Length: 463
Image: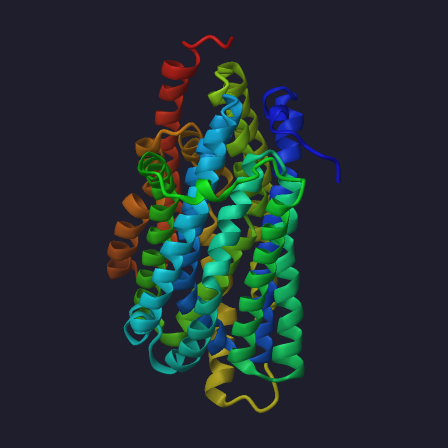
């Protein structure tokens, strides 16, 4: 693999550079998303729809702890990108060392808390009735591997900040392939059920950590830290926290949404409705992978050039990223509108020996998922502006607008809508909350991004 220098972020043509950064990110996200998708298909077909619902209950808790690592990674990587752009290598090294120390301290503490409150958290996130037992099995095992996940997420953003997207892509592919292989062995061959699904996921996290650890020890990384870089620095921690809080708050809101959705849908239609949302949730992770890939590719380019005071390149990066992401989002939209029933049918199959109640639940899920999926993705073509706009403010170190815009869709709009509309419209109220929130958040983000470009980018002259 050819050696890539971070300086290329400030010199190569934006279109070519964005593709170079976004393509590996998209492939990595695709493989990770396929992992979640195929994992759900395996679990649904080899264990049952209750198992899919159980994993859906556990995901927000484990993802939140893993997202702590991602938030530390993205917050620190924004600083690292700008430091490298300003040719301040020592600051980049100190930030990276602090990221590692902070990730370990925070995630290990969260694991202990997560295990201590296990019997409270699972029901709170919708793990009720028949879902509780398998959810507790899965939760307990997966939680042991979450610190490795957090370190992977943190390290992956730093690899990308160095301008080495291909290595970041490999880091995302390894755990996905490992997880699916372990799924086949543990669930299909060994018939370990939920324990097998959980151990497959945990082993995948460890494989990812092993590769990230290897990368930073190898000659491929520019960040060669020493012991003195691990000591926590209050000023650096404050800057990491301010920017990383954006990602952490976003994931916290996602976890709250899972909590609300699982409980609202359980009250409307029981375990079967939770399973419908579980399938749609997997598609939310999977279907938009190219858009998320463009967003990930956009971050280091915008951050590096902003740090280098090349504001014309920052503006060009914003426009190009929005254009690419919008095209990709529109393609995804067409596919989801045409094939929702076929997509839903991938997740479930009737097996010999299933009880009448299990067969009835499968039939309900397959009947109700396509219509719900169309509503959830109805505003997909316009989300590019919202994602890139919020990412811009995070990339350039403006924590407050980044936080507010990141939370606008899910926190400020979606949560109130999903709490109010189902009282009048039932299940339809849940599903139409998604596109309404997308439209409102995109309008708000477009306003603030346009003002930022006019005020702070057009008026500044690149050297």
